[in-house]
Image (tube, rainbow, N blue to C red; front, side):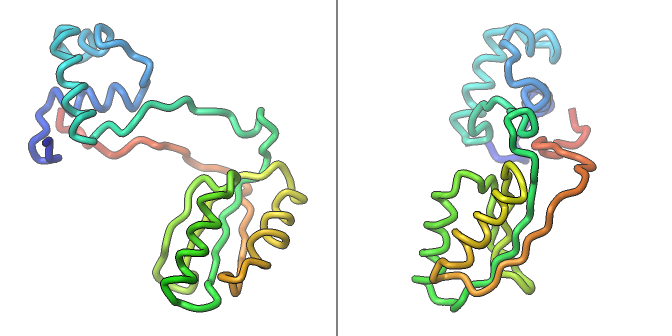
Length: 160
């Protein structure tokens, strides 16, 4: 199994190339990083098997799909029991609008990143779904006005 410290320069270059464009063929990656297509294929397979590459995805344009609001929602639970936390996690896992959700330290118990079509969609999510749920005590939402940076890329550094 690969450990991040066991990655060599070529592994890091391969990962960086895939972060930039996951549609690259092994031949194209090999040309970029100085390997044959078969060597690149073996390394990619090993990185996938080690769990360092978890999948390949298409990046969709939310705006063009009618999802105009990006919101962050802070949620405070009604009680801090294991059952209550499980009920909330089950709810979040079923909500298609929720892109990411995190258990947090600080004032709020959870931070949710969601996309909705408009203010009405946000109102439905907050007032009809989250607030009435038995696990939830308080909800606080913030609408994103402008995205300064959006990157799913991990900082692989310049080692390679």
